Length: 455
Image 1 (cartoon, rainbow, N blue to C red):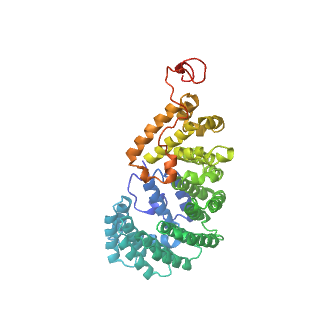
Image 2: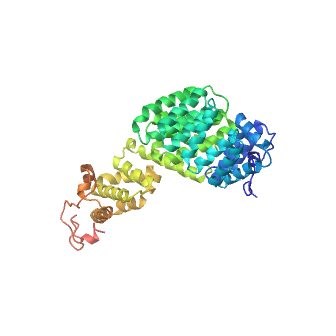
Image 3: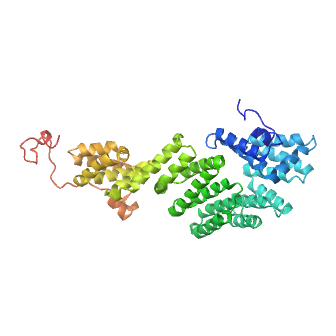
């Protein structure tokens, strides 16, 4: 029977621990369970384990949580029932029970925190903000509550207020890795509306790295921070992303099981959130990280890494003397077709390769020998192009497909930019008159065209 086949009544039961468990026992239990219930395969179970660990590994939160056990018998069942509804995803019912408890015992800030979380999970972000604000009024010097209030502001879309509140949390605890991570995440979200915020992100990244440099307690948490910074910078600032990746690898090496668990999560997030083309130059570092966290047997990870490696080869084609048209072709093929226009571009590239067949055939043959995996992405076309003695026929077929796709996509000549008009051929132009199948072959052999060059 699974650990989660029955409803658990406490965080201790979730982790399989006694209430007297020490910090090391809590940590061992947590990492033992997350290896079995990984976030991508068992998100619900992982979330519950993580919540239990975050509460019991924090001295203050654990003390407040343990205080729940001292509730009168008439109230304790309500709290356990509220937790059960939380685990079942019935946030509205859970919040209602937390509210009943707080009405009787308003001094239980840990219950108030659970109440705020249930409201957030139920998308009642406005009410959640009110509860976090009440917690901050009750405990103005609590950096954890200030950080949570900032994140709650961010959920409402109030990014300026969010940044200000998380900054306040950092004045209370300047070396809080969690708060720096929250601030980075908040600014990254703001970038979607204001791309000019790059300078602020650079400043925050520098501050964060400097502030947590000397933090040794739970150092593995820095992996989460550096992962956020990597994802924020990974697309456009590849040098900075490489620096963060090296720090992630170092922390994984130095933090044993804790580092490996967070490193595994970091690798999954990086590979799933950052396009492979942007990661191409970091392939060797990503592979090293995958080996460190023992993820090379994970099929999805292997496939993502293969995608990154292929992108590395694609980006290096021009350095190997290949025409840029091959790089453009493989970028589209390796990313899969997202819309009809992608297929239109591929066929247009095929047309141009055929239109200058004598120049491109040697490069296609080189490609087959030097980059077999790239060649395989479009081998049916390449094989046909190398074999054919009638490239005009292939060009004509592609011209028909181009016109069909343009009509399907509703693309008119007026919709195209000048360079796009040049890229999409309009007609097939012949340097020589058309030769019929039964006409004498132009090569001068004396044979019919169909028996000679037209075969």
